Amino acid sequence: MRAFAIFAGVALIGAMLFTIFSFTATPAAPSPAAEQPSRETLQERLKRVPGDHRGWAELASQYVDQARVTGDPSFYGKAEGALATAAKLNAGDDAVLTSQAALAAGRHEFTEAARLAGRAIDANPYGAAAYGVLADAKTQLGDLRGAQRAVDEMLGLRPGVAAFARASYAAELRGDTDKAREYLEYAHNDAFTPADQAYARYYLGELALHAGDLKTAADWYAKALRAYPAYTPALAGQARTAALGGDLNEALDLYDTVVKRLPLPQYLIEQGETRIKAGQPADWTLLQAQRKLFAAAGVRDDLTWAEFEADHGDPAAAVRHARAEYDRNRSLVAADALAWALLKAGKPAEALPYAKEATATGWRNPLLSYHRAVIEQALGRPARVDPTFDPTLPALARFS
Image (cartoon, rainbow, N blue to C red; front, side, top):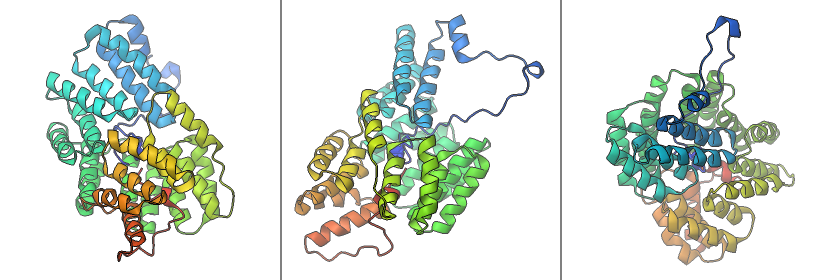
């Protein structure tokens, strides 16, 4: 999902992921050293000025972002260490609290993220970044009104790519795709770095993809890669459009590159489903290895495993993971995951209230709509399944 594309993923999303809507671009190739003055790195500055609590908080934020960009959860431990130093120096500073909130969000501890972001706002009501983390956390906790209030505050304080992207997602969750697209166009117009341009174009592509417009989606993904060739989510978008368009060989070639660059669980599941669709065996070995790495780094990702087990594993395990996620974070996606897990476990009557909750806001999410329709059909109720939806590739329909 867009709040976590990291933040996610999400999820990205989902990720999100969890996406804090910051992006650390790979720097351009530098000029020869003789032609440019030497620049002090943040680490060098902290060696020289170890009492700089904001510097330690900034370093922690960079580590959180690197965890998302690289898919390496060990950066969360590094962020935790930097924040421990920052907190010893000035625990009540808004920059320290905001970085702590971002770390909690990255680990999917959204209640703690919201608490810390609230403390940061109390310390400095004009800190736009804290409102961004608060909006993300509130979204994952199912408090869409609270998330919208935080987005509005952020828009008022610092309108730009990060704020417009969050406003777009908030509009999308309430079913207003026109407004969601409008905000993303604002983000695109405001973007001046290649990374920001790629980011905005990618999510314009995602909007088109989930509306069933593969051609427009592919065009936006291509434009994102022209702006920033190293932007892996756009390459994953191209793999999705190829798979959904029936070109499975092209999709698998693209997924091979995607997972070599960024072996996130979402991409590994998408690759596995595409292999199955192509008549090849799915190999979940790397996925299970990543699962252990993320757990060891303190990332609680019951949502991903609920969805995976429901579609490709043990329905009982799916229900356990889905209930754990829903009990902590009552987002629309968590409600959907619980509904689908319960259906797969043979409990459609128990599943239906959660499916209704997941679709209550008008969000035009094809996967959620499909899940609800199948649940209602299992109960003998009239329900229309979108004939264009491919149930063999569910991970490709999840919002990143």
